[in-house]
Image (cartoon, rainbow, N blue to C red):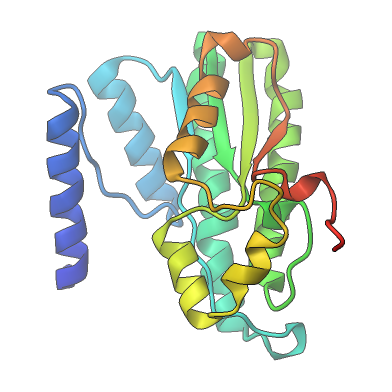
Length: 223
Protein backbone atom coordinates (compact mmCIF):
# COMPACT_ATOMS: atom_id res chain seq x y z
CA UNK A 1 0.00 0.00 0.00
CA UNK A 2 1.37 3.39 -0.96
CA UNK A 3 1.90 5.97 1.84
CA UNK A 4 -0.41 9.03 1.79
CA UNK A 5 2.37 11.30 0.49
CA UNK A 6 2.93 9.00 -2.48
CA UNK A 7 -0.79 8.78 -3.21
CA UNK A 8 -0.95 12.59 -3.24
CA UNK A 9 2.00 12.69 -5.63
CA UNK A 10 0.35 10.17 -7.96
CA UNK A 11 -2.88 12.16 -7.93
CA UNK A 12 -1.02 15.40 -8.68
CA UNK A 13 0.88 13.79 -11.58
CA UNK A 14 -2.27 12.26 -13.05
CA UNK A 15 -4.09 15.60 -12.91
CA UNK A 16 -1.09 17.37 -14.44
CA UNK A 17 -0.94 14.83 -17.27
CA UNK A 18 -4.66 15.18 -18.02
CA UNK A 19 -4.33 18.96 -18.14
CA UNK A 20 -1.70 18.69 -20.88
CA UNK A 21 -3.88 16.61 -23.17
CA UNK A 22 -5.43 13.21 -23.84
CA UNK A 23 -2.17 11.75 -25.20
CA UNK A 24 -0.23 12.58 -22.04
CA UNK A 25 -0.18 9.86 -19.40
CA UNK A 26 1.48 9.39 -16.03
CA UNK A 27 3.02 6.01 -15.18
CA UNK A 28 4.62 5.28 -11.82
CA UNK A 29 7.84 3.25 -11.87
CA UNK A 30 10.74 2.35 -9.60
CA UNK A 31 13.73 3.35 -11.70
CA UNK A 32 16.12 1.47 -9.41
CA UNK A 33 14.36 -1.78 -10.35
CA UNK A 34 15.38 -3.29 -13.69
CA UNK A 35 12.06 -5.01 -14.39
CA UNK A 36 10.09 -1.87 -13.56
CA UNK A 37 12.15 0.21 -16.01
CA UNK A 38 11.92 -2.44 -18.73
CA UNK A 39 8.14 -2.52 -18.37
CA UNK A 40 7.95 1.27 -18.37
CA UNK A 41 9.75 1.66 -21.69
CA UNK A 42 7.95 -1.32 -23.23
CA UNK A 43 4.65 0.27 -22.24
CA UNK A 44 5.59 3.55 -23.92
CA UNK A 45 6.43 1.75 -27.15
CA UNK A 46 3.23 -0.31 -26.95
CA UNK A 47 1.09 2.81 -26.46
CA UNK A 48 2.84 5.16 -28.89
CA UNK A 49 4.75 2.91 -31.26
CA UNK A 50 8.01 4.84 -30.83
CA UNK A 51 10.22 6.83 -28.49
CA UNK A 52 11.64 10.03 -29.96
CA UNK A 53 12.98 11.77 -26.87
CA UNK A 54 13.63 11.08 -23.21
CA UNK A 55 14.73 13.05 -20.15
CA UNK A 56 16.24 11.24 -17.17
CA UNK A 57 15.54 13.59 -14.31
CA UNK A 58 14.90 11.48 -11.19
CA UNK A 59 17.36 12.14 -8.41
CA UNK A 60 17.64 12.30 -4.64
CA UNK A 61 20.02 13.76 -2.08
CA UNK A 62 21.14 12.71 1.37
CA UNK A 63 22.09 14.96 4.27
CA UNK A 64 25.31 16.90 3.87
CA UNK A 65 27.97 14.76 5.52
CA UNK A 66 31.78 14.90 5.62
CA UNK A 67 33.33 12.10 3.57
CA UNK A 68 34.63 10.03 6.54
CA UNK A 69 31.17 9.98 8.12
CA UNK A 70 29.06 8.85 5.15
CA UNK A 71 27.07 5.69 5.85
CA UNK A 72 26.86 2.90 3.31
CA UNK A 73 23.09 2.99 3.69
CA UNK A 74 23.03 6.57 2.42
CA UNK A 75 25.56 5.74 -0.30
CA UNK A 76 23.53 2.78 -1.58
CA UNK A 77 20.19 4.61 -1.41
CA UNK A 78 21.42 7.59 -3.40
CA UNK A 79 23.35 5.59 -5.97
CA UNK A 80 20.38 3.28 -6.55
CA UNK A 81 18.41 6.24 -7.93
CA UNK A 82 20.94 8.75 -9.25
CA UNK A 83 23.32 6.28 -10.89
CA UNK A 84 21.66 2.88 -11.27
CA UNK A 85 18.26 4.40 -12.06
CA UNK A 86 19.65 6.79 -14.66
CA UNK A 87 21.63 4.00 -16.27
CA UNK A 88 18.69 1.58 -16.43
CA UNK A 89 16.43 4.21 -18.02
CA UNK A 90 19.13 5.29 -20.46
CA UNK A 91 19.90 1.71 -21.48
CA UNK A 92 16.29 0.81 -22.22
CA UNK A 93 15.62 4.08 -24.06
CA UNK A 94 18.66 3.60 -26.27
CA UNK A 95 17.61 0.07 -27.19
CA UNK A 96 14.41 1.48 -28.70
CA UNK A 97 16.11 4.44 -30.37
CA UNK A 98 18.90 2.33 -31.82
CA UNK A 99 16.36 0.14 -33.58
CA UNK A 100 14.67 3.20 -35.13
CA UNK A 101 18.02 4.89 -35.78
CA UNK A 102 16.78 8.18 -34.36
CA UNK A 103 16.13 9.86 -31.05
CA UNK A 104 17.59 12.12 -28.39
CA UNK A 105 18.15 11.69 -24.67
CA UNK A 106 18.94 14.32 -22.05
CA UNK A 107 20.35 13.19 -18.72
CA UNK A 108 20.12 15.59 -15.80
CA UNK A 109 23.41 16.01 -13.99
CA UNK A 110 24.28 19.08 -11.91
CA UNK A 111 27.02 21.61 -11.37
CA UNK A 112 27.90 19.05 -8.68
CA UNK A 113 28.88 16.84 -11.60
CA UNK A 114 31.39 19.45 -12.77
CA UNK A 115 32.95 20.58 -9.50
CA UNK A 116 33.33 19.56 -5.88
CA UNK A 117 30.99 20.50 -3.04
CA UNK A 118 32.00 19.96 0.55
CA UNK A 119 29.82 17.52 2.46
CA UNK A 120 28.35 16.12 -0.74
CA UNK A 121 30.73 13.36 -1.82
CA UNK A 122 28.07 10.78 -2.70
CA UNK A 123 25.79 13.17 -4.60
CA UNK A 124 28.77 14.62 -6.46
CA UNK A 125 30.02 11.16 -7.38
CA UNK A 126 26.62 10.24 -8.80
CA UNK A 127 26.39 13.40 -10.88
CA UNK A 128 29.96 13.08 -12.18
CA UNK A 129 28.97 9.56 -13.24
CA UNK A 130 26.01 10.91 -15.21
CA UNK A 131 28.38 13.17 -17.16
CA UNK A 132 30.61 10.20 -17.93
CA UNK A 133 27.71 7.99 -18.98
CA UNK A 134 26.46 10.73 -21.27
CA UNK A 135 29.79 10.92 -23.09
CA UNK A 136 30.11 7.16 -23.49
CA UNK A 137 26.52 6.71 -24.65
CA UNK A 138 26.94 9.50 -27.21
CA UNK A 139 29.96 7.71 -28.64
CA UNK A 140 28.15 4.37 -28.74
CA UNK A 141 24.98 5.75 -30.30
CA UNK A 142 26.33 8.32 -32.75
CA UNK A 143 26.61 5.78 -35.59
CA UNK A 144 22.96 4.88 -35.00
CA UNK A 145 21.65 8.43 -35.37
CA UNK A 146 20.90 8.87 -31.66
CA UNK A 147 22.08 11.88 -29.65
CA UNK A 148 22.79 11.86 -25.89
CA UNK A 149 23.47 15.02 -23.91
CA UNK A 150 23.34 16.23 -20.34
CA UNK A 151 22.21 19.34 -18.51
CA UNK A 152 24.04 20.55 -15.40
CA UNK A 153 21.66 22.87 -13.55
CA UNK A 154 23.00 25.28 -10.96
CA UNK A 155 21.00 26.67 -8.07
CA UNK A 156 17.36 26.31 -9.11
CA UNK A 157 14.14 26.88 -7.21
CA UNK A 158 13.17 23.25 -6.68
CA UNK A 159 11.99 21.40 -3.57
CA UNK A 160 15.42 19.75 -3.30
CA UNK A 161 17.20 23.11 -3.36
CA UNK A 162 14.81 24.62 -0.85
CA UNK A 163 15.49 21.69 1.51
CA UNK A 164 19.23 22.30 1.15
CA UNK A 165 18.86 26.00 1.99
CA UNK A 166 16.69 25.12 5.00
CA UNK A 167 19.43 22.81 6.24
CA UNK A 168 22.07 25.49 5.70
CA UNK A 169 20.33 28.92 5.95
CA UNK A 170 23.56 30.78 5.27
CA UNK A 171 24.16 28.84 2.06
CA UNK A 172 21.86 30.96 -0.13
CA UNK A 173 23.96 34.07 0.31
CA UNK A 174 27.10 32.07 -0.40
CA UNK A 175 25.58 30.50 -3.51
CA UNK A 176 24.45 33.85 -4.86
CA UNK A 177 28.01 35.08 -4.40
CA UNK A 178 29.17 32.41 -6.86
CA UNK A 179 26.58 33.24 -9.54
CA UNK A 180 27.52 36.15 -11.83
CA UNK A 181 23.85 36.67 -12.69
CA UNK A 182 23.16 37.08 -8.94
CA UNK A 183 19.95 35.08 -8.80
CA UNK A 184 18.52 31.58 -8.57
CA UNK A 185 17.19 29.95 -11.73
CA UNK A 186 13.54 29.24 -12.39
CA UNK A 187 12.92 25.59 -13.38
CA UNK A 188 11.51 26.78 -16.71
CA UNK A 189 14.95 28.06 -17.69
CA UNK A 190 16.40 24.57 -17.36
CA UNK A 191 13.40 23.17 -19.21
CA UNK A 192 14.08 25.45 -22.19
CA UNK A 193 17.62 24.08 -22.49
CA UNK A 194 16.31 20.53 -22.31
CA UNK A 195 13.73 21.19 -25.03
CA UNK A 196 16.44 22.64 -27.27
CA UNK A 197 18.67 19.58 -26.85
CA UNK A 198 15.74 17.29 -27.68
CA UNK A 199 14.83 19.29 -30.77
CA UNK A 200 16.20 19.13 -34.30
CA UNK A 201 17.75 22.56 -33.68
CA UNK A 202 20.45 20.70 -31.75
CA UNK A 203 20.86 18.06 -34.46
CA UNK A 204 24.68 18.10 -34.36
CA UNK A 205 25.06 18.34 -30.58
CA UNK A 206 25.89 15.13 -28.75
CA UNK A 207 28.00 14.05 -25.81
CA UNK A 208 27.84 17.50 -24.23
CA UNK A 209 27.04 18.65 -20.72
CA UNK A 210 25.60 22.16 -20.75
CA UNK A 211 25.66 24.11 -17.52
CA UNK A 212 22.49 26.14 -16.92
CA UNK A 213 23.90 27.97 -13.95
CA UNK A 214 23.94 31.72 -14.48
CA UNK A 215 27.67 31.60 -15.12
CA UNK A 216 28.63 29.77 -11.91
CA UNK A 217 31.00 27.36 -13.66
CA UNK A 218 32.60 30.11 -15.76
CA UNK A 219 35.09 30.85 -12.99
CA UNK A 220 35.50 32.03 -9.44
CA UNK A 221 34.58 35.54 -8.44
CA UNK A 222 36.92 37.36 -6.07
CA UNK A 223 35.78 40.49 -4.30
